[in-house]
Length: 318
Image (cartoon, rainbow, N blue to C red; front, side):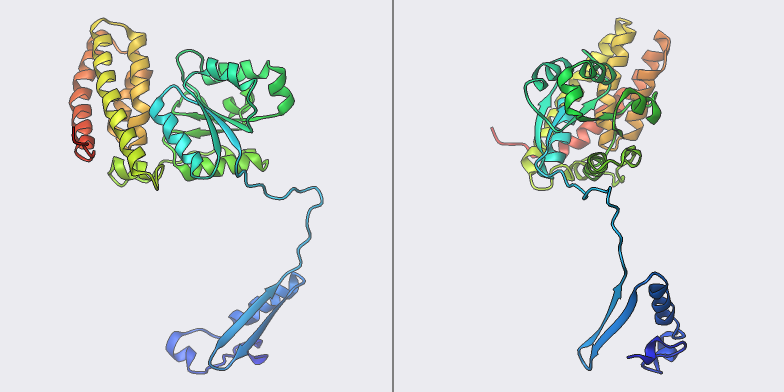
């Protein structure tokens, strides 16, 4: 057992011929352990195997805090899109967070003053009050300043960078589309005072299936998954009609609002082509003729995508 730590030594001399190797690995590992003030040792029993133990001294920083896992934290979630609100809520419930949900930032402002929460997650682009305005209003509240609550932005916007969010007072920003894993890791980093690491962006892996994309949010609840998809199909069809009407009546602002409302969920489902077309409608000042042409390109793709999703829905008997 002691010889195997020597250079160019192997317990079984036939190993080199069969598998390669020179007998230096354990020698180097033992020396590295000793340089670090530790040791590498071995115990062995013939026929039962060997156990190698690496021991290294660890000096704890007296100013550091134990890594905190925010189990049972109460998190307030603000998002005007009911489908995305549900996704975020389910992602947190799976990690044992308690949640309060709001479809309106103004409603959240009123109720959070009387309801203590540990953290707030907010969408940015909302009709009655956007996320930056929501945070600005919170910062004027004494209860918010005294509590030192953390707030994370969840957004599909691309016209602001991480520094804009940090300067406004957000602890982190999660870009849509996102995964439950990314959301949970961001919360962990913020809670444990690693804000720079928590500024994150992740695109979920594209497996070509909206159902599989959403299953990670509902790992044990197929009924909830079906409910979200059904609601999304109904909402998307209704929003498509509203978008067509806004283009026909030449209401540019309504076109931008409608396109934004549709784009985020389509991108979350992996429909990147539709998402890009909708984002172009939201962010570009097209002429009336160009808007009409863009919509004619968009409409059949959306209808086809919704039809594909409907095929995977479980239709309950009447």
